[in-house]
Image 1 (cartoon, one colour):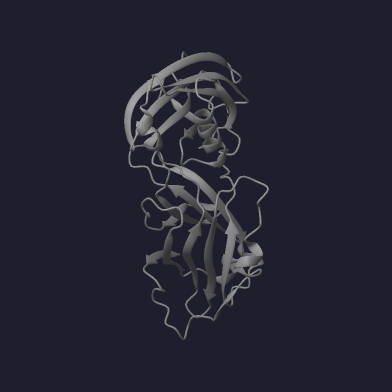
Image 2: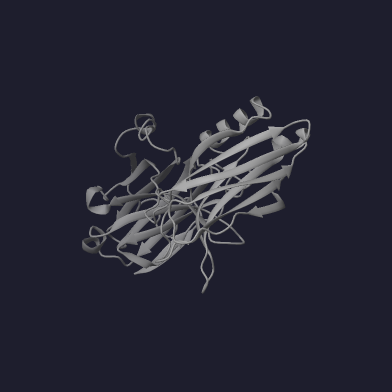
Length: 306
């Protein structure tokens, strides 16, 4: 089997060879409301079909909508990895779309020399990630579809809601923290109170918390708590003050990262929280509540994210 990626609309397969496209499993509108009860990770549009004459599976990644912000700037740099499970060694990737929560890719990928009887034993797995030049890419969400459930004789187009990635990013634990804004002193006090149900990254759990003050995507100042040894439900109760003039509030982000300290290797990231005007709904609410109630600590639980 060989793998090929190329520009839209399709590579190698001429228009006469390509089956007619139709929308699978209902219209875009029918699926727009799926999954509203869970965390909204956005959704992705893609199509898949099989060319029997060429023994080639075609996968086209079209676009995504309403992706969550993963970056300090309140946006993401998304791209898609494409696998045919259970094979995870061979993968194809789309291009990265910079600072875009509603990216359009329109990229086509060919799995060539792939007998149909083997194709229907595979699961098409799409993973949407946020590209990070300086550290590990952040998973946004995933979609999987068994190919034996799809009529591959025609190019079929799907809209699918993204689900939390199976690396456990949906169950990293929670952090309770408070924010207090003092406009006369031009300061924000962040109190890291406690965490619960933290994800164990290895045998020994030694969590601590880093707090970064960001302004216009640039790191300004970092603080961190002490390390709590062998504890997945640590109580920190540590406060940190940051200078933030009122006129800079809209461009300010506070990034909370819960880490697992490792003496012998690199410390692991358990999860993150981005607090600003432009983060997720829960984070934005906390930020606005802080501004609406000056000089009062406003506490809130936050789910840690990958």
